[in-house]
Image: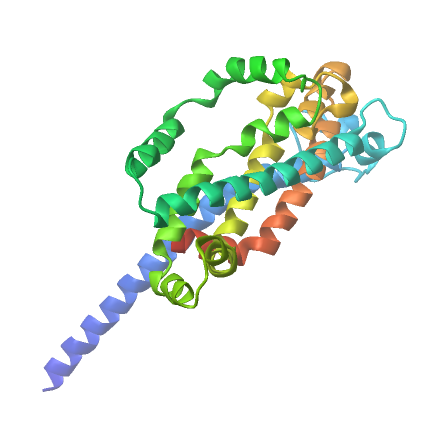
Amino acid sequence: MSNFTTMITARSRARRARRRSVTIARVVVLGAIAIAFISPIIFMIVTSLKTRADATAIPPSWIPNPISLQAFAAILAPGTSTPVLQWFANSMIAAALNATLVVITASLAAYPLARMQFRGKNFVFVIIVATLLVPPVILVIPNYLIVSELGWLNSLVAIIIPPAASAFGVFFMRQFFVGLPIELEEAARLDGANRFVIFMQVVLPLAKPALATLALLAFLGNWNDFLWPVYVLFSPEVQTLPAGLSTLQSANAVRYDLLMAGAVVASVPVLALFIFLQRFIIEGVSRSGVKG
């Protein structure tokens, strides 16, 4: 009996030791991945707090010496040749309006594909999903010609309206609408509500997590877009933040301190928006069945 108890105790200790080893290995791997992702952000912030000479020093240091806010003062001062605040406002206006339009158009297009029965519904949905396979760079020239004919060049309208038709948005919202319980809509129909009332007063309130997630994704896509604004926006006063910051490389012989300060300014609203909407994002992604 004593030998049996000793054997059980040894096996239990071995299992605890294996679990402890697995836990330590997971912590090490996840810690290494976290460091790999966070390091560029930390380096960006550190470089933005350096002087011009310290930012170009080789080898680079992780601690600013001395800590300086000259880069922020240089890009944010009024009357400077790099109107970062104007670019910031342009990006904010364009991204907010584009995200609003994407949410409206995607939800209106997705609901019929999820709930209504009509001939060719599946074919239309397949075509919409197939457009996701088209590389966006292929659409640059056709979109440029259309925008030019409409007289939208060198205007924020050129970066707000064309991206408002989002195939991913339609797919995302359709997946969410399919997962909603049909009984709620049937109950509203029995109460005399028509299709539009059901959509506005029953479906959309339930779809707040998906709408918030899609709005954030559309905002980020428009906020970070670089290629399209470079083609259609020419004047410095109408440029967006990513396109405007790229001019610092040629006008100031690659001022890394200014570039990193601009990148920090550009990251603030995105980070704040994500923190504010993260609860809706997690719920929206999990309920729509779209992973990753």
